[in-house]
Length: 443
Image 1 (cartoon, rainbow, N blue to C red):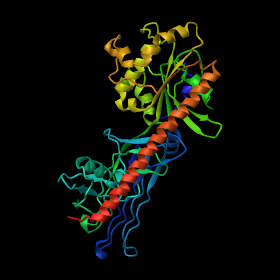
Image 2 (cartoon, one colour; image 1 turned 60 degrees about the vertical axis):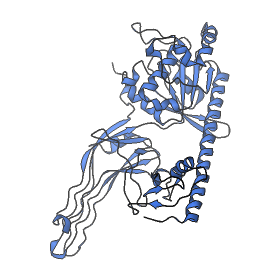
Image 3 (tube, helix red, strand yellow; image 1 turned 120 degrees about the horizontal axis):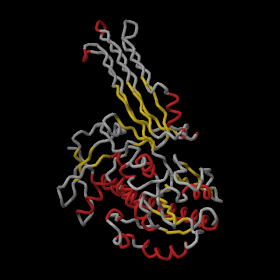
Image 4 (spheres, rainbow, N blue to C red; image 1 turned 30 degrees about the horizontal axis):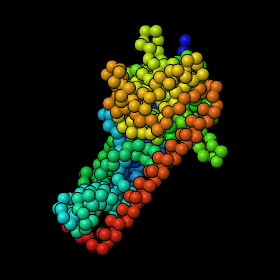
């Protein structure tokens, strides 16, 4: 019998048909041009979910308005009405061929080549990859140039084959800022001298809105490891907690509140199983949400895990290695995130002895994995910033320690990122001053 809460399931993927409007007809007698067809955009907003998007567009079709025709009383036809699909932050748009639709560069982006004093090597970059206010940015070129010459940077030539605006795609297709948008179905141009005064149809195709939750911390673990118990103890979330596996069937977001009003978000993802990287047990559906988090929080049961009597029982150390392996096989970049390991259920009998037996191995996962089969051996073992043993149900002091440690680590890495940004800014100022002093010329 289907459980009631499955009926209102969490929606993290939605398919829509989008079509731009047809351009209006021209008016040859007066050289009139028809209005451009409206376009369809997907725009991010801070609140909402894909379920509300599905409800608003119940037909799963989003059609922009057609351009107005040119006539003797109005030589230039009215443009068609644009349509905006408002989606929550964290949405990626995928077309029917499986390609990610990307945002475009602004009109004042251009490609720049830089020559150093001692080399003639050209270094190309695109300005908008680094700055959002469209200032000339030579940061990447400066680094490469400074590495190739000992006496600093001497920019003698700026080569711009197309100095004016050059619209090219950016490698950023995620809607992660409020108000950011992506054009998904452009409208057709209006009828004019170039197309025999016949309006052109707009583009029409299906797109998939794929939601990846945005949170500071992602909780990762096997079923019944205590993820929901920890989230409930550490935050304001109220997930379902029970003694059987798979009590979490959709992601939960909890907010960690601190006495100084600082807030940190934590995502509790449904439990993984072996083979999640190959989409076994809806692995991709859950693992994709880890991509947007700043830090990984792996939680394991000190007693290990066994999915069913037909599956191989895994020890606590084996579950750590398996989680490492699943993350690596799904997307290796995930292992570059800061990671914390929480060993849960320390209130069970014999837990202290089991912890002492694996403590040294947790500091050297690479060496520990050698005693197991290759299936449990990750190529890139995680280096945990902290390993903490607690009982989420009966150890409030331990939970508080975890809460404080998570904040310390997030603040530490945020400060590192800020320092790097300041370093880049200073280098940019140096390069800008060098350009002004050297007087670059266009060729």
